[in-house]
Length: 223
Image 1: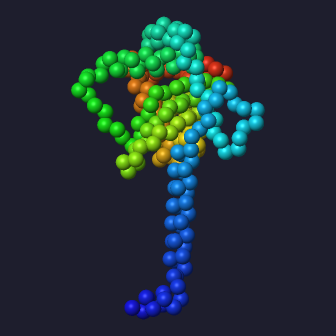
Image 2 (image 1 turned 90 degrees about the vertical axis):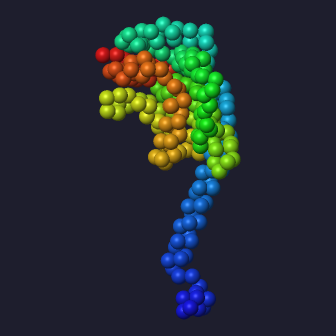
Image 3 (image 1 turned 180 degrees about the vertical axis):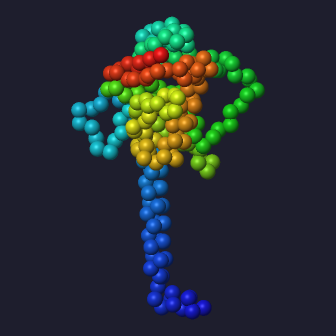
């Protein structure tokens, strides 16, 4: 009873004020992240000379199948242990081929239950010594679904005995999340898993001696 009287006479304690302030800050930060994540990015063919402050621009990689038609031959060389150099057109052609093969192999009765994060079609772009991976993703939160664009830019680094993509920037919508390990790890895990690489390619990737990006080309070097 005395605590209730003290609270009525003197107001909340310092600890209650501090906890309330911290909770307010956390809630405000979460709401800001959600707002930025659902804020659309601007899809353009090239960056404007005077970018608008606060606006995230997204340039898709070329998916020209004519320019990427050498992929099949390079894939064969790669899985046989030969070093190859690939372009974004070849990578995007590879994605379409793998998606088609996966769709043919999928049984009619197989159903995929929607998760919290469901990636759409991936797109690769190689520019300025960086690999960009982009994809629309469906976010399912408390039964509400919304679609946002994810864009990751980075290079490759050796982790253990294999090379892995090392993102320098990750955007979910207009929200930059690479400094949030749990969020960025979850997003990148779903994004890379969507590539659905067959066994022969993953085994060949595990044998690589070096991976580098030079200009607009990805160099895969075998021992």
